[in-house]
View 1: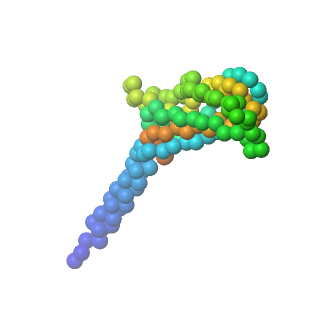
View 2 (view 1 turned 30 degrees about the vertical axis):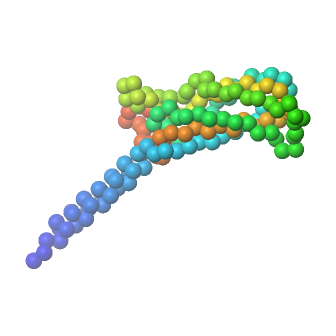
View 3 (view 1 turned 60 degrees about the vertical axis):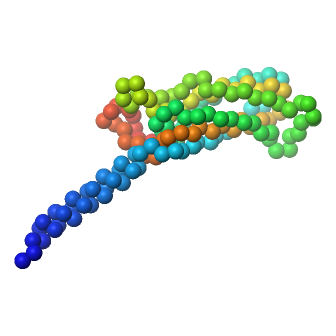
Length: 144
């Protein structure tokens, strides 16, 4: 006669294992990117900074790229194209393990030369990130 109780336990163990695999998969760092933008207006030399919070948690310091675009209906005369430099002034991070950090945001510094009016600064952060990090027991904060 078959033992239905052991079959039920096996099914329960199998379901728990599938849940564990889903949990680990959701936490595994995978390549992600976050793109944002903000506007700068004015003429001449402008130095601004802004803080951005990422909607994902990067497992290591992400790469940072940027560019600018003019607001629609703005134009520039030849030789007066604005130039832009940007950098990360400070990373928002927390220590996951001794000496290992996760990154949750950054303060960006931007210098714009010769702005013709409204200029959008477009930036991108890219690197391994957690889609659904589990936090709490390690004292790292709330879940994103």
